[in-house]
Structure formats: structure tokens, C-alpha cells
Image 1: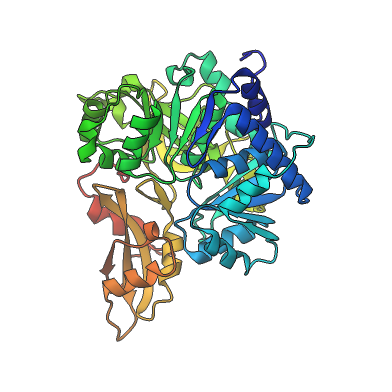
Image 2 (image 1 turned 90 degrees about the horizontal axis):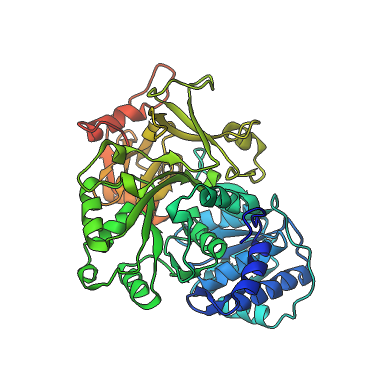
Length: 517
């Protein structure tokens, strides 16, 4: 590819690879498509969307697990600037409804096994004009003759991912073509080893497509001109099958998923000879787990730090800093990628000296366009100068490595899933026995953190922890449901009445030098 003119849109990449390597496999999953077929299918989908009356800036939604169909819809819509909004399939019905309603999506596409859910959802949302099952979507795509269209540009939104908000409702993060592809050339020019691709590589997409760690891998495969191996969801058997059958060379997983893999009986019997890189994120990798992984997989490890608002990775800990014998560097999130600026600021927004803890802020072409229909929330997170406030507290060392110390916000990360206390608290507050509730994250050896609810009973009532957990499970996604419940006569508060979450967390994190696991 011409380094002087990097490609910056989905349409440009699809046209490029279809001309360069038409018969090479582009995507495998429930369908197998080479680059010529992917280019043709996404052209037909772009035409079908236009024929249905959709225009640049309109939204469509996906309810389902990872699928080749999802990426075909995403890429085809992106060619004309129609924005895809994937909905987390693990979310409870009210959460799904909020997201689809918020997008104003005119079309709702359902993955295998989700057609009935999608139809029930659409029945409550007048904006949704049509629901497609997976079979209906493929028939629609395959049955459309392609017509000319005007491609979307680098600054046009193409993807809308929802991230949980501290006020309870999730926010739609708008991402454009440039967000997805803008840093790619800088990494190549800087000679980052993991930015280079061999033609026969296969990227496994195993994390959920409603997360940047899932959909982002699909974009990575397309940009590299290599095959994306799409797994419906992460399972150890599915990963081992894909590595054996498809020759996977790299994938992304959270540490909890890596732990499941190395402890699985099939791990010792699997040939990992083609595996080059494992990217992981959402939490640092424990030293004991790294040692296990290096011995089992024999490949290079890269820690990725970022967030939905930064289109994923903006800081990476390179393979050379992953020492199985342990090193101080392994406690770092990593160094900013080429093209990324990072600084640590105090409450006044001014940069702090090296080694001093403050809020981590970052600026690059990866930073989101903004939160969909939420200008005030956008202004709080994205400054006029283009800096994103991460909400993470940390510091920079003298060599420019970023260290995460704590969270400015109260977010809990459990198994790579973001959980905001406000969402869980809102779900529990209506319980007839509960007067007050505060939700915190406590250390968990498997998931990094586990969700704990601390509740105060109503006068004359008794709290049954199992009842609280069951009540929450009916209202929110399973990964947000508290794993345990503590009962206190009152919650600790500061003089202004704000609940002191740090005081609730402290006993569980005693003896640890930082408040993230």
C-alpha cells in the first residue's frame, strides 16, 4: 500500500483489497468470504440501504452475537455513512430497548437466535420500520443488484458503541472512519512490530461486537488485508478449534479469558505454532498468569490500554516489557502509540510533574466525534483542544510509561466488562426491603473485580442477600448483578452527604498498593 497516501475509509480499504487480493479469504465464520465477495456483498448492502430510504447519518442496529453477517452489515453501511449500533446481547430487555430507541434506528438486524427478541423489541419502538432475521438479511443482501453510491468520508460517523454512564443510562460513542484507521500508518512508519502483517495472517474476533475490543478487531483485519475469523462468542473450545482449523495468528482477550484458556485441558494438546501475538486489556496481567501464558502459547504479548471514547488502544505495553521473571514495567499500562499524546493533569486541568498522580488525558485521531445527542456530556469528556478525559487516575514515569493508579470515576471492571455502580444501584433501589444501596468493586481472582452491593435495610425489614441478587438479575445484565451483598445499619458519608465509596472499598483492598486489580 502507498505509504504516502494512507487509506482512511472502509470504502477505500474494501476497494483496495478487492483489487489487490480478490481470492484471498477476508472473513470466516457462519459464511466464508474472500475480498472480492466481501466487496461485492457490501456494495449490494449499501445499495439496499439507500433503496430503503436510508441516508448518511441514519442509524441501523444489530442485536446478536458476533457474525460475518454483522461485519458485512457494518462495512456495507459504513461505505455510505450509515451508522451501525451493535447492542450487547447480554443486556436485559430494558437496556436493549433504551439503546435502540436512543439510536433512532430505522432497521433492526438480528443475529441467529435473536429474531424473536428483536421483533418483540421493535414492537415497542415506532422508529423501527423493519426487523431482519439473519436469513432475511442475507436474502436481502444477496438479492440486491449493486448501484453507484457516494462513499463516506474520513470524518463521517460509521459506528456507534454504547458505554455505561455514571448517571445510569449508557451513552452512544460516535466513531468515524478516521477514528478507526487514522493511527495505522503512524504505527507502520514507527516500525511497531505488531503493526506489520504477513499476507497469510488470521485475526480471531472473539470478544463481543458491542465492545471496541470485538468490533475493533474486525477493522484491524480489514485494514491489514488479512482474514478475520469471527467467533459468535468466546469459549475455550471455540478458541482452540479456531487456532487449529483456521491458523489464527493473533487475537485479543481479557486476562480472565486467558486464564480460562491456560487452565483448560485442551491447552496442552493444541499447536500454537502460528500464533504471533496475544493482545490483552481491561486489566493488567498478573505475573503468575503471564508465566503460564508464555509457557503455554509461546508468543508475544501486548497490553492494550484505551476506552471506547478513544476507539480502543492508545497506549500499549510492548512484548519486550513482558518479563516472565517480573519487572517494574509490567505494572505499567504502556507507552502512547505513535501519533498519540498523553498527559496527566490536576483538577485545574494543568499538567502535573513526572510521577505525580492525576487524571490521564489523551489526544489523537482516535478520539471520538462525541456522545450521540449529548453535547453537555461530550463537553465534559472531550475538550475543545481535542483532549479526552479518561476518568482514570495515574502517572507518567521519566521514560513516558503510563501507570494506572486508581479510577477517578467509580467504574468497576469485571471480566473486561464495564459496570457503573449507578446502573446497579438504580436496579436495586426499588427492592421493598432496601432503604439505601451503594455498589463497589472488590478483588476477584478470576474476574479482576466482582460487583458487591452494600445495602441499608428499611426500618423493621430484614435483608436477604439472595433476594437482592435475584431482584437485580431481573432488571440488568448478568455481569452487572452483584456477586455478594453486605448489610450495614448506615452508609459512610462526607459532610455534604455524599457516600464515601472509598471507605466501603478499603477493607477489601487492604494490603494492595492500588485500587484496581
